[in-house]
Image (cartoon, rainbow, N blue to C red; front, side):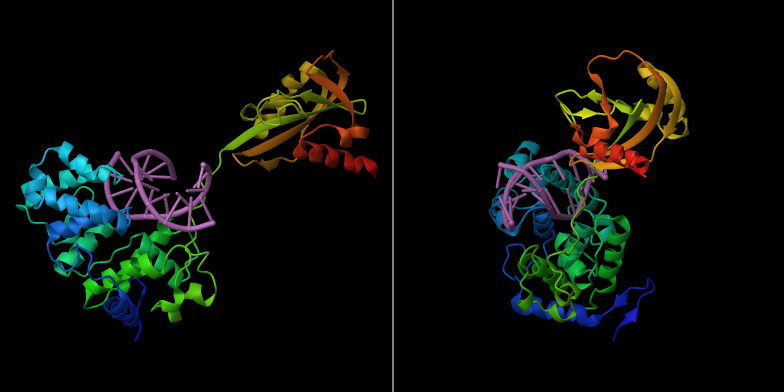
Length: 364
DNA sequence: CTCCCGGTCC
DNA sequence: GGACCGGGAG
């Protein structure tokens, strides 16, 4: 029986039932932070497990508890000792927050972690997902987690083909996570989701044949497990502007030898003007004085802008045609080139393309 | 080797 | 939306 929540998300008890059944028979049950309701131990494990895999955490967890057996021991310890125990685990903000959190729980809660996930999430180093996990494992509180593993499982099962880092997509995942919570057995369910993501629904080579969600998995049905979840779009490359002048006189175009270093190093190109100075409707007015360095300007007209993509930035090129009635005397790095043999000029591809298209109409 | 990943905080 | 770090994948 499926029904909609007030937020329009599909409830589906068979989902959590499948996860819980699988967790009980195939999940992990003997990790050092399992089989306890000790919030201190659960909290410590959850913080260590942020950004860090189980295998790496095991040894640190044991040593840490040996040195700081109780929350009070940790709160009372000098920070250097806490940092020393964390050394090698990475993300040292976690250790500083851990120590600060221990002190706050001692000071504000008498040494007992609050059971309300919202109060937990107010403590340093504990976000929404970690708060839910601690609360579920230590109190049986019905709260949704959404860590990297769960995002991956959901993205595949529900065929979410947008990057989960986008706010709206992530909000939708939280709503799903909430709607899918079981009425009972939150501990097995939460652990089951984590275990599924960690052991079967792995980033690469997921073990679909063993997955309890296989029959309802969109990614499996459509052969898209390798594409989901959608990867983080690589950071937006910078946008740069350049204005290029197509200075024409007597069937020749003015070319400029570019510097050896930098983009298009050593090639010929069109004279370049800083793009930001000549953008928009004012472009033509800004170009005319520049063009006058090359002779007596008869007319300036804007040509169709183009975009050229490099590996490291995107270049927006605003070309301007400058017609001269008389040439100024120009030496290096300038030279005049016959438009008729422009095809043989050592020009970068977009510039050659621009000039060829400019010449093409005259062929008719 | 380089690329990619990840909870929380800022 | 990037920084924090170490580990896993390719």
